[in-house]
Length: 104
Image: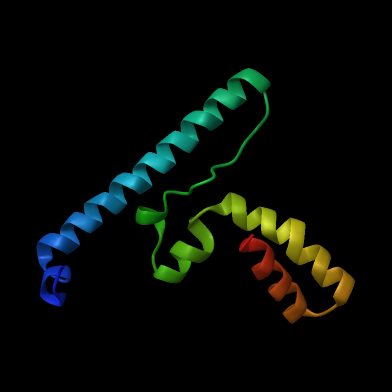
């Protein structure tokens, strides 16, 4: 229904940017709020799950690789990649195992 000109128009791109900023800010603030409540009730130190990816990233690779969803990254790295790497001694098999589990 939309032409290519509609999709790359400044209004459409600006709208998408504002939606991305809203989602990023909402995720950052809500994860901070949950962490504060958890700290207050259980006295357990937490870390930020979403590290304000939109404004702290300097490149797309940093956005996806270091800022976006660090909880899933840490879980896959410690729960799948490292055990697979130590059992098989193959980096490629560990990467494939991690990729397969991430799709589940």
